[in-house]
Length: 317
Image (cartoon, rainbow, N blue to C red; front, side, top):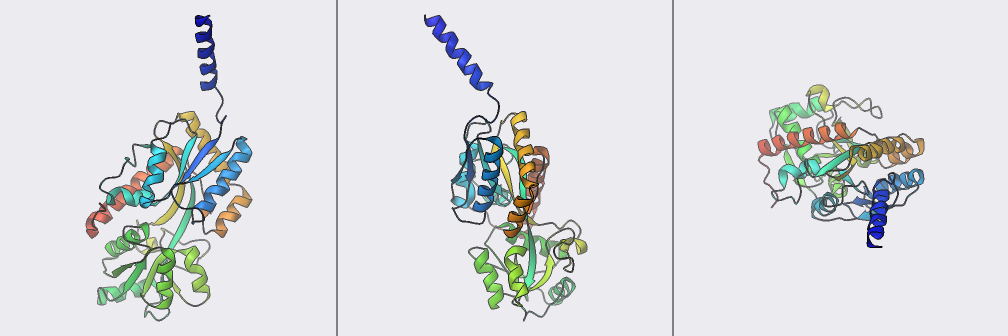
């Protein structure tokens, strides 16, 4: 009787392990609060994935500690593909800035696929006496430190993007950090700072209203949506700064399950209604293979390590 029961349990356990993926609810961790900029992106993907895979995809908001709370929860989860996290570009700036992260950004995650890119730009207050990238560089060459630029905070991708520009252009300008993108953009509008570095999505309406003016986009080449605005990378090859979102899971997710995730994210990203909805949020829908995503993250971390070192930005305890 006991042998029969043990055999039955073993067969049941084997059947569970052989169940096709996915066969139970999925947890999607969002390391940001409900209603934040990342939350609607997560819920859009969760809805589309759930519809196609036929299992619930539950969005779990786990904000705090510069996204490390949610990311740590994902890193410590079972590597079976049923817990993933929608991470952002902050993981690449946090890696060289935080002395004691509870996880290794490169070793403790399985990178599944990128999901969205968020273009960034430099704008100026209308009263700032520069109207182009060439004029900005010329002014800063002649008068180092004579202009200020705002960012969404110390150590953010936007702050580091400004420092990278200073390094490549060989110029100096004064960084003024704010608590978030909203206050930073409004500081530019109010003339509290000369320049603002942030997303095209947030600053575009202010440009259209005549309250800001574009100086350059923070990319290697011009954006299709703003062909008249020069790219910093055109003048300084190698300059590329973007915000992004992407799906990750704990290290050790089986290859076939990681590939299934990548394939599904690519399917969702290509849906016309998803592209349209993401565009309304200032996000360009993209996808990638797991290898492409992990290689991109590693290269971004190495880039920001150098920027942090060269700019002597103090680490976060």
